[in-house]
Image (cartoon, helix red, strand yellow):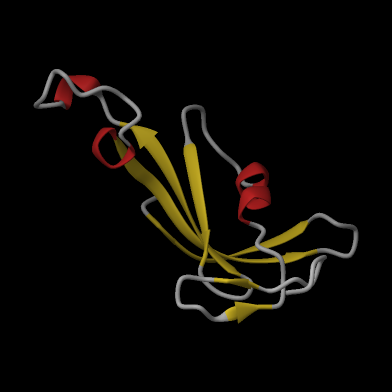
Length: 103
């Protein structure tokens, strides 16, 4: 496989992509609220799904031994978006919201 800006990566289905995976850069570029934990996954050539996770109130836990950090148990998705993302000519990201839920 070739290295560099046009290196091919794969998603879980094994389909090859000709662009870099920008997930980690997207996490740093999107707007967040205090306490948000953002997870972003590539789902297509230039498409990404991002979820904004926030902690649940601990007094709602039915198990007093549960501690924070168990994402699916102690957090909930505050917002979810599908984004179209490409690298702009200047090197930054061009981000377009394709769809949004949970706001």
